[in-house]
Picture 1 (cartoon, rainbow, N blue to C red):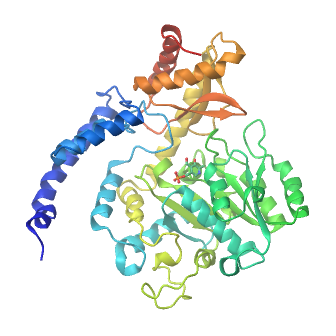
Picture 2 (picture 1 turned 90 degrees about the vertical axis):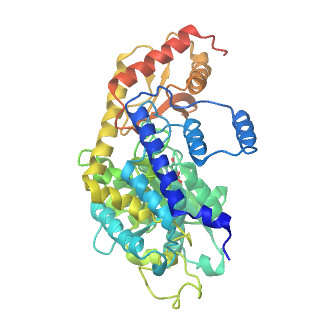
Length: 479
Ligand SMILES: Cc1ncc(COP(=O)(O)O)c(C=O)c1O
């Protein structure tokens, strides 16, 4: 028997009322940030202050409107053109609405019946990706929860396809290894450790002066691994790597993988979306030779998180990765049923990610992804040009993407450049007008931006550099 409280909680009338209010709040939020009526990207508070605020808040009752409004005010605004920090997109509104649809319907997606529309749409979306990649007719794939999970899934598929032993069923008999650039995202290292490869099984290949994997060091690294008794199962290319935004030479990696009969995986979590960009697709030359490719929607395709496509050159590899009995979900374990997705994904329940992609394709076509990636990569070049013309700053490298690394050098001594730039980054965070991040390149500290917002302009870049100079000149930087 439902209670009055339960009936109130599920009231359609209340949903409409609160939903209308939320959409109004979010529309104002978008308008305020995109048109810069709001000049703050982040209202900085320390983790402990924020916790104290919410602990106190939890002791009081608030309207839902008040609660949503407070979350909005106290969250970083990725839609502000001065948000140029980590790689997460300001969501395109139609895709946010699709997320609301998914969140409300809550279709489980593990088996066809638990998400008929979104399951079929997932196949349509996967085909859009495989076609843009240039894969053949046998290609396939699925959507999964994030680049981290996609990379892990791809490496498990590689192990299944390449390793001599059936590790899935029998455990490890041999030592396995993968080859990956020292600049690859940490999740590749984490995936290999989860798979039990250990430190020695993750062979980090050095990068050249352009932060691309040294292809001519691959043969030696491979040979050394074999001499030490490892069975090398895969080489992973970064497209691009996270810190520097530079792409590994995918064609060379493909040739190397072919020559040694190992799996070639491309971590295109950030830049894989450039398959849709006529201008920048060349950065991914060779990607169509990869055995598997991960591409995040919530990075360079403007969907809400967490939405990732994992594409495979051969359909069969999508079925053999995980093989498990689950009689409460499906009758025949060995059947290749494209529509029972949990047979192929790490997740059992997953969100209806396909509608986040499809809502964009339906409204604007894949041209949206071309416009989005091309605009942002162009902006990376624009910012780099502005930095180069300013003698107070040092550009780490010519960017290939929307990731740009630079630092203030002014007339600083070499030994104070790192600490002063660390202090600049900290003060920018506390100030809140801009949000930028940082990284280390070859052991040196750099400020780092990822231009994620298509409304960021040259004038924002000039303002950012001026702000950095004024922070340096007018505040007491404790070094
Ligand atoms: C190259 C690369 N791979 C993987 C990831 C992890 O992706 P996710 O955050 O979707 O798990 C990132 C995140 O920044 C990345 O830049």
